[in-house]
Image (cartoon, rainbow, N blue to C red; front, side, top):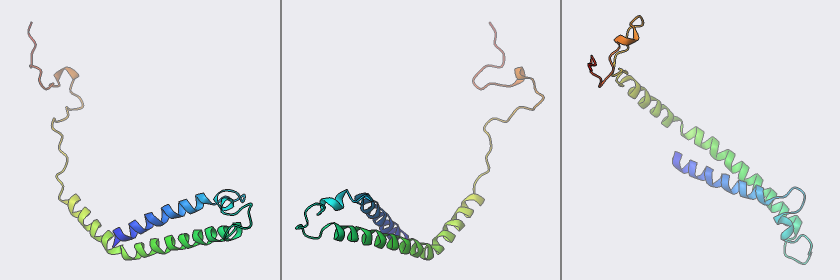
Length: 122
């Protein structure tokens, strides 16, 4: 169910972005191309602007409703994921370094280096 809500939210968000980009607050843009200068065209600027305005508000309200519905229906899955995460953390093997750290007061010369012989003879 969460996947369905997520897909619908993405689709409505993309449509909302497209509808907002089509609008031009100065009266130009696509709304003027659909009948800006010629009154004999079907619809006209006023109807196109009204449609884009109503489409924007409809998509915003739809997005708002879907987000709230997803939040209300997805409560159980969050708790299940929390439980699984706790089980994984509790069952995890504690970190153990491969090479033990030298003592803080040990001189640097006494620290062994992997792959190097203990004494170098020439």
